[in-house]
Image 1 (spheres, rainbow, N blue to C red):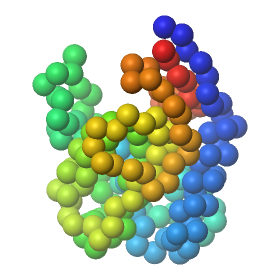
Image 2: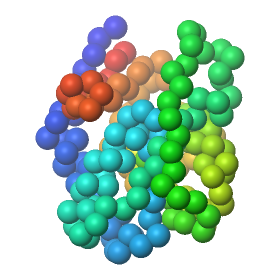
Image 3: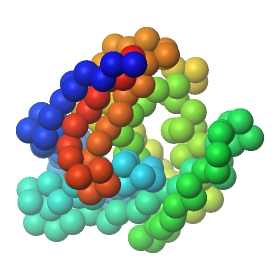
Length: 176
């Protein structure tokens, strides 16, 4: 297997700035916006986006985290034990505008599980999806509203997003 670095720290930072600007274009005051990061790296990206938005609007939008492991449709086939994380919502999601954040969009199954988990917290009026990387190969009809980069891959390849908060560095790697 070979690994190719697709993005480094500067590129990831620039992409997140652009994504924050796109969110603000669509939602200038972020009034009802709640960022919900899918554990693990989606939650880290949501925190970074909230800080970028705060710099632009003067306050930080509420942030939640969502662990989707109990909602996965492949939990019986996962090798080893899944790491169970913490789900935490800042308030009810009823009638809110939820910006669901993840690192990589692949088959769409993680997003499907996240939507199911989110509904346990209420009924939002709108859910939008923001991803750092879209690598294609959808199995479900799910599309991101905000995409940092589209990275063509083979189905067998892997896209690894490394973030300073969790991995000590910022990079995106294609492993094939």
